[in-house]
Length: 289
Image (tube, rainbow, N blue to C red; front, top):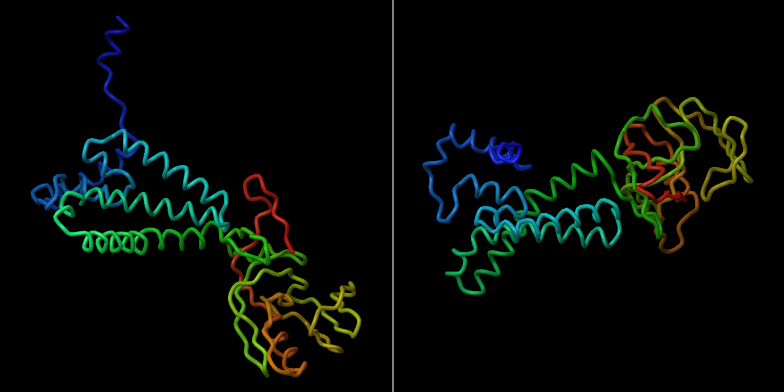
């Protein structure tokens, strides 16, 4: 009896059934089922094939090939996330885009066979550019803005948690922040993203001498181009971070010009914060400069 009842159990819904139901609802509302493309699949299958990597083979009944594509894509996605910022992650990202583009080309493959080699190569290039610019580039930007941002510091890669909760930053914390470029007398301070340690927070007193600098009485080693005899008070909603960006110097610049340039970017507004480094990225403990 149990075996007979099992035979009447309905099949399980596939993982993409919510997305498929959404497309079915849209197609009924927009009457897309009455439209015909110059392809041998329905319009909603074509849309799914463009959005989901590998679905083009499902639309053509090649489910085994689709499963292989799904597995390769998932493996590449895992490698990309784990080794974010390294060369292997860039290669995995390229594999993800290529697998996605291969599905789009498979969808229109029978039509492209009517074209000569030159036009097929151009079609492949256009498909790759469209998929990358319309899908993967926006997704990558959102990933870096909302989840994790890789920063290369010297020979190391530091993964930064892309959050802007400036209220949790304390003295001694490391933060990633935007550095404005500066141009002085035969000197150039490269702008972009920087990673630095917060030496002082709003309201702290910073005293500079020829041998060291103090923060509220605590003594720290002097950094290059710091003022010789000055006292600063960190203003509200700012941090004191002495920039570690590379300075390009040509000719015989004046030391005063370079020092002035450094002082202008040492007070970092909280609004320029990008995020704080993760302590660990998966099993790897991150070491900071």
